[in-house]
Length: 188
Ligand code: M6P
Ligand code: ZN
Image (cartoon, rainbow, N blue to C red; front, side, top):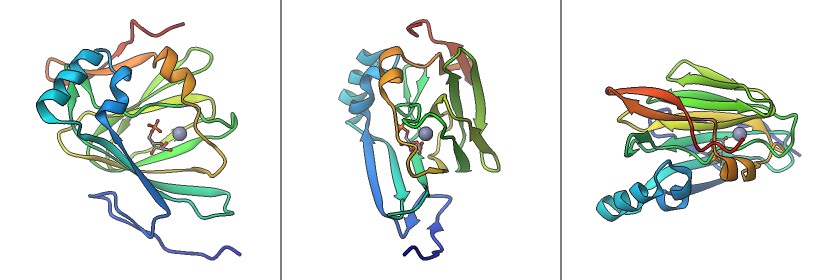
């Protein structure tokens, strides 16, 4: 039987208590997602294989919904901001929300039928991610980007298409400001 529970979420650190799971993504695991993998190698040679982001989950066994936090380190590879892998949901009719707690970033999205959108990530904004939109978050600030995500427990992740085709857009720094540009390498 499921019982109600209050879960503490620290909006500054992203700590979740109690949590049911967590994982860390090292920068090296994301190498081929950047416009310049060679610059990832150079970054790691200089700074080490840093923790690019951490995901902490509250996923109660037998529940229909789950939530958790993602804590993204600030950083850049050349002019491109630190990013998550990006995915569609394995179950095609499942959406998600991202409620930013601290830091600043951009949520890049594209639909299967060719639309692309960007949603600002900053405290006070809860981003709605509809089903069938690929989504990737980027940290455009100089502090950790912390957000609470929530979705159905069976949504699942489909990483294959974004891994092979890329996202339609990239978030880069231009003239000192976050700018979204078309990804010339997006495989249509
Ligand atoms: C959000 C959620 C997670 C996801 C994480 C990292 O926190 O959508 O389900 O795992 O971002 O994104 P990705 O898995 O694409 O690297
Ligand atoms: Zn998702």
